[in-house]
Length: 353
Image 1 (tube, rainbow, N blue to C red):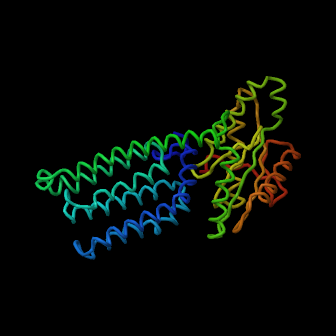
Image 2: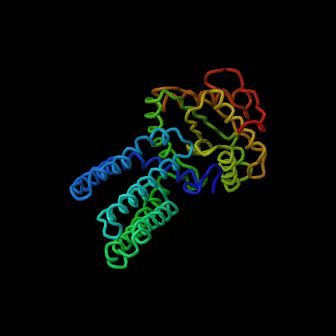
Image 3: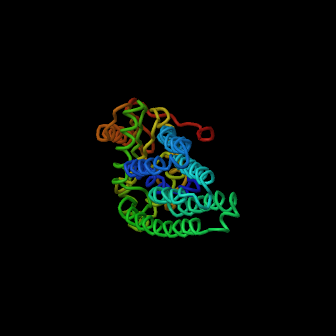
């Protein structure tokens, strides 16, 4: 598990996939809820209006959690909470509409598809296990005699759950393999420029709605050509890998780092102002210098830029890149910001979180 990773999203790649897929399945989720509303609405003459109250709670909870998803440093938690809430609400409906004979049992299967679209194997297994517990708990546990008398519907629902989970796992695994080749840098394991542009577009939309800041830090290895010339490309590759690792270890879970190409990296800091971004950059600079990547005295220079509201990538990157070159001109192994010509003072790393 990477630094800042969680059980559901152990790596930056897992969280990047989650955030990328969340808006992509929005329309499918709306169709799903619409179908659910029609199905439960048609059951009102037999079960009463209360069943629509449960539906409303399950449907409306997710929009209430969306701001938490947008702001959270670990968005997998509110998304998982929404899934747990939906399955629990459906479980209550199953228990109150006959348990083993309830026609609502197959509705529990909806969530498995959306979970596999956002989470990796751990999420799929956890959701399948939780759904199985809900299904058996609201049928076998609450109405054991009715289940013994006719277990057909519950058993079919359980078999369909297992089959759907297996199929969803296969699709999820294929998607991850395709994405790995498309958005991961093979040398360092960092996200690449394509992943950066997709993620930045989403952050830009959020910033336009909320007025929050976005900061970026451009990081370049000092005199990297000299490393290759003096020690060979194999040693140079080792330096790149270890610099990438040092940067990643210096960041928190919501602070993502990308390899732009060559010896250049970029860090995206949602919600950070110039001062916060400069402290992060200084922490990265010190970590790389202390780590001696490849067993060499390797340093990095960093440029910081910050914008607020309607943020576009190109001008923000240009400002950070100009700050980076100013740091190079002023002696390397330092941080410069686009808002201040002065060097960023070193910070007490012990007190920076």
